[in-house]
Length: 400
Length: 230
Image 1 (cartoon, rainbow over the protein chains, first blue to last red):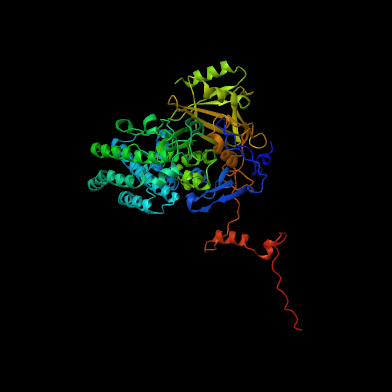
Image 2: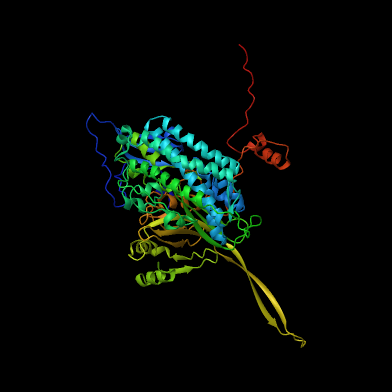
């Protein structure tokens, strides 16, 4: 088969047939003088609503979307190739740059995969610290995402600055612990890098105890907001069968009512010891995806409060852990965890040498965009901005 | 969940002409995988997805792996009796043979309905140069859509029956497949000369001098003669 036959953007319109799902809106034949031609709009790569350098090629019938093709690769630096040419540990700071809003959980996902590859144990205190960092990251990500979503709705910056006020406090904690605000580089194979002081624990615990007040304030302002309801309810619906088949994960999947949270399913780390619930949506529209984030933040606060209460004393690194000259046995492993965006996985093949033979990142942001076209068809171009905002992508992870 | 051997036996019983091989993983994770033959892969994948005991409805991760040609040295030992009546000599003879390389596509399957997994399946191409086609599993799991495009882009596996097989991360005019192990980065950087020997050498080799531009499309500017004043 000649690849040039299948490559290239085909200009003619075909009726979208999304894998046995409901047929999209049919493209009407335009003959009368009151209708113009179809218009192709290239949204991005430099566009404030695409959250980075991301492009959507949208075909419009009036204001209605009849076709949408995402275009990637503007931030591609072949992270996987770079990681295959260096040692296991040297890739750890580079994983910060994948999802640069949630570096703590990206670190953890990589550490999890390497520990699975090498059969490395992790001490109890480090497991608790990892859960604390991952849940604080979830608070940062979700509160900022809601702010960005409202930016996309047109309420420029007021909700975002409320979120940034809280984010700043958490990021200050990360800075005092790891030395960096966003590129934390905190996890290691077999534990964590720095042990927090009792003062740090007290400050973080106080922040978490105050966090529900911020959530109440935030929700009072946003959840019942009239513009919010009109712009998001019934927009960008996604039915569960399609979402599962397309591999969507995270809050986007759970908004459609599919109960699949890796913290419960895989029970990695010490999550089975914690008491929390997994919120599920009923309609799968943009409003449900917004509510998922708010409800998940409340559950994260519950997890954090339990973690601070039960945090045990002890070492933060496994004594058998080896950082220098680390050569795992030949074999392969796929480790995955529930990052704020969805399932973040690392697939590693070792051939016994100091650097991985194959290093693959399974990016939730990229795969959650699979159904972007189906979600946007039939809606207006202004809605596509809101739908994209509710999926929650980070381009560092989409393009890698 | 059933063990991988049981799954393989059921697949072979259901599709007698299909080749399903168990690939063991010697590492600590011990995630073994099933090697499917390319001609039946679509039917086998449909069976894995729809079988009521498995229901692997979620394809989490799709990726490519490059295994280049490998030179293997075989050592054969032959005992040669000594004609003088001494102890027999052991003569070693080495023969090298070329193990042909291949490209591999790996899929990690889970079940969201029954909450089990993973089942790892893989497919291999015949070689790395001309027979690099594999059947696409995007008609079975839509989740493979972008990921198979990425494998096509970075490894050059052509997925047949993929609805939209285009480059996804590299630009359309790009020729090579950068994740292959034998990929050579082009030497087309714009160097900022520094006081380091090899950097200066490369800068010299890439500089736009008349010597370097000879034979190319670019021609050095010819100083124009000033026009004669009327």
